[in-house]
Each structure stands twice: as C-alpha cells, then as structure tokens.
Amino acid sequence: MTTFDIDRIRADFPILKREVHGQPLVYFDNAATTQKPRQVIDALVHYYEHYNANIHRGIHALAEEATARYEETRQKVADFIGAPGPECIVFTRNTTESINLVANAWGRKNLGEGDEIILSTMEHHSNLVPWQMLAQATGAKLRHIDIDDEGRLAGDSVEQLIGERAKLVAITHMSNVLGTVNPVRQIADLAHAQGALLLVDGAQSVPHLPVNVQELDCDFLAFSAHKMLGPTGVGVLYARHELLESMDPFLGGGEMIRRVGLEESTWNDVPWKFEAGTPNIGDVCAFGAALDYLQELGMEQVRAHEVSLAQQAMRRLSEVPGITIYGPKSDEARGGVVSFNLEDIHPHDLGTVLDRHGVAIRAGHHCAQPLMARLDVVATARASFYVYNKEEELDALIEGIQAAVRLFRAPAPTRT
Image 1 (cartoon, rainbow, N blue to C red):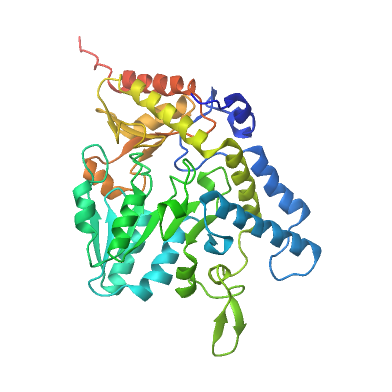
Image 2: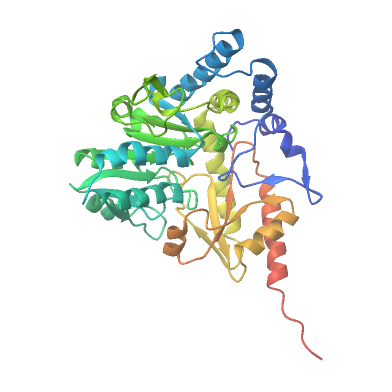
C-alpha cells in the first residue's frame, strides 16, 4: 500500500457511512461515477448560498464573484493536465459532449470521402458512435485497431492502420472494461507522422493517473468531473489553441457571440465560443474543489494506491474456481479496473447477490458492446477502485462472490 491515510480520506466522504441492506457500503463502481468528499459538497452549497449569479455578463458583486470562481476552475483544470493555458479548456456537460463537439465542430469541416478515422475495438460507445455518425455524414471510413489476448492494442495493427489516409486517431487512454493503459504518446507520434490528429478519451485516465497533455502530445483530450470526485454535468475538452481558433461553434446562442445582427453574427474568443448559454456554474465551481483535493493527494499516489488494490483483487479473485479475469496482468499496463466472469453465473445475478452484501459493482456491457463481442461474452462483472477504497473491502467482495457460487452452483436436490 501507499502512504495514504485511508481513514482520514474516508472520513471526508459522508456516503461511506451509510449501510445497504444492513451491510456497510462497499463502493466498487468508481469507473461509472465516484463519490464526493465533503469539500466538494460544501463548495456546491456555498455557491448557491453565497454567490449564485450568472457569469460574464453582470457587473454586480455576485456576478463578478461567480465569474471569478468559474474561471479559476478553468485555470485549475489547465494546471491539472499540463495545458499551456486556460484558453485551451472548454467546459461541456461530460466526456460524451466533448467528443461530439470535436466530431461536429472539427470533423465536419475537415473530413471527407475516403478519409480515415482510426479507433480501437475497446472504445466506449462515447468514442465510437459520434465517429460512426460523422463517417455517415462525410463519407469518411472507420478503421479499428484490434486487441491481443491480454487486452492490449495489437502492436502491428496500430502501425498498419495509421496510414496516409488517416486524418484522426481517437483512442481511449485507459479502457473502462479491461483497465488497459494504452501507449498514447507512441500513438501520437505515429498519427502526427502521417499528418493525422489524436483525440484521447481520458474519462478513465485523468481521474486515476498523472496526465500531461504536452507530454502526451495529444491534440484533443476529453474527460468528466463526476469520475474524479466532482459533480455530474461537467465535462472538459482540452484542445490545442490553434485548433479551437479554426473550428466553428458547436452550439449557437448567448455568450458564444461577439456581435449579433438580424442576418449574421460573429463569434466570441475561445474558449467561450464553444460555451453557449448559461453554463453549469455551481458544479464547475465545485469541480475546482475536487481538483484541489486530488492535487493534495498527488496523482502518483492515487495511481499507486489503485494499482495495489487491483493487483490484490486479481490475486484473490484468481483463487475462485471457474473465474475468468480480463485485461493485462502487469502493474504498468493497467489501472484500477478489474472485469471478470464466473462460469455459469450471469454478471447481473452476481451483481444482485453482491448488492445484498452491501457491495456495489457494475454488471453489463459497460457501454462497450463491440469489446464484449471481441471477448465473446454478453457482459462482465466489474469492480473499480478509487482513493477511498481499502484492502479490507476486498473481503466483502470475495465473501459476496462465494455466496453467489454457493447459491447458483448448489447441487440440485435428489428425488426420493
């Protein structure tokens, strides 16, 4: 384990004090969304109690304070991911909207018949469906990097597919199913050598490991606040400044304009050109508190803690008869996500039994149906870890699994 003071950290999360079905809550569904510390909850309440106002337009005290706090969070995001400046940060609703923004504002302007968009078979639907829609609209072609038997990108496939017709590579940094951490910088070098751009789906990486966009050399990065201790309804798009300048607005309306006439309009500066209407002000301000919390913990420490939990979970799960665990086995190649299946027990049945033991996991296709098909399964069970999870909670996971095995594998009664 790392030097995390787990008891101190857990004390910051009110929800961890509750019980589920009479059992202490064990929350292992962090890849879907994370719990919120008191500091984030208090920041959201403080906004509504003390400086609730619309931003950028008002000249009264509340509006100026709300604007300052909102833009402070933009700077915190830029610092957190190593962006050159806050002008490279666009606030959206979630990772999905960030990717759709790029598909529409950049893709429709720059892609045409025969151009290629390179994806992988492990992508979340959010980094697949927008490109399918774009390809249908522009005549571009989708090509998919396959995975090997350990759940890593097939190396030969990467180099072969990123060819001269490639215009965009859109790849997940860390798989929400396999836990695979992909070699994004290597992919960036291959893409840029062919004149293509790189979009990174960072929904599962930015909350869990150190990410620096300049070191990764990515052109776009998308992620969500709610997966990193922040509120729901806040997403981030990082993009190179020159790309944002060249892109047309995604949505039209108030705030994203400079001048409006009856027949035509001109646009605001970036990043506000892409933030039409009243944004999610209170939640963005509270996101700033989440970033402060993670910065204080240190992202190297966060990653080490999760890798330790994942390795212990895989070791203990591997002792269960009839289990299949998906994804890489080595520390450096994976994050704190462990997906598995038990022979003859559907993941939904397992999830139901675990819930009765107070253990929250995710069961299903995890918005990655093509990956499920590649693995030749309909679903998996998934345990995913975060900063407040501790070793002892693995006991409840294993006990719940053993209870499910006893229930579903019990021999049928014999007739007399």
